[in-house]
Image 1: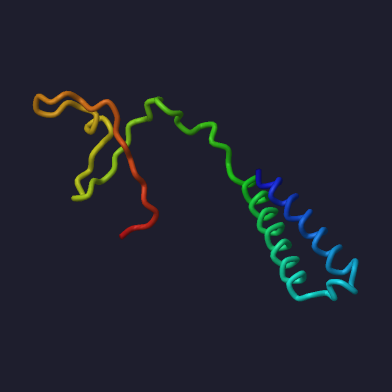
Image 2 (image 1 turned 180 degrees about the vertical axis):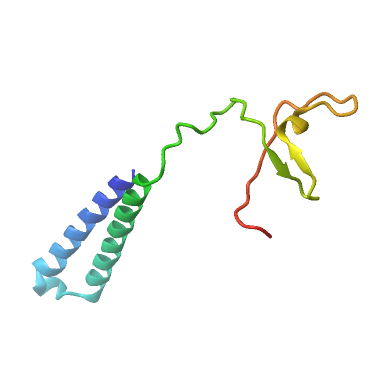
Length: 110
């Protein structure tokens, strides 16, 4: 999809430059055509950068899939108490055990 965006921006860039500078008697190299060309070049550059950078990301073949049980681990809850995944999935005081646990990871420490 991102490559389609880059190709579309390139088409707009070429079309705009041909219209602006191909018929100077009509358009006289207006500043808008130059501005739109710069915007199209920025879009192409950003798309190319994102495409190249995304290729460097590691594959996620070892990541757990939806519905797959993950290995047990320990994390701290909001009060600082250490809990394991098995503790979270265990039945508590007569209530049935939960079927799943939703984990939310935040970047950084607040």
